[in-house]
Length: 152
Image: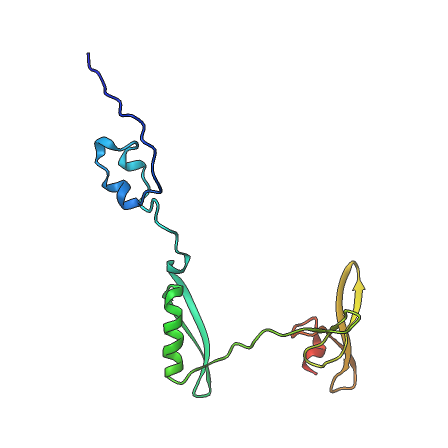
């Protein structure tokens, strides 16, 4: 008959690292090696995941798109190298909406207060502008097919 000696329970004094878990002698492990994930206890660093990064810029008057495989920690260096080569960003800052004292939005392109409109359960804000043909068209304050007056 074989007797097994049980070890007394020893609580952990703090978190254990993956390296410490893998360094534990097999005889002392509470779980077999196969059950330990390779990244046990290692912090998840989202910026280290490989991604395709695309940077839109203007270089010597030409619009360019530079794409590379890397991680987000490499982005500042890539931008600095593009600037050093003379490229400038093409991204425009987001539109800033202003509002009237009544709370109505003001079109960022035309500076006109917009009216609330509704049709078939849908609601939106727009204002009327006159196009080059002399027709009245609506602008919703952004470029799009449902905002033909934005370009006027």
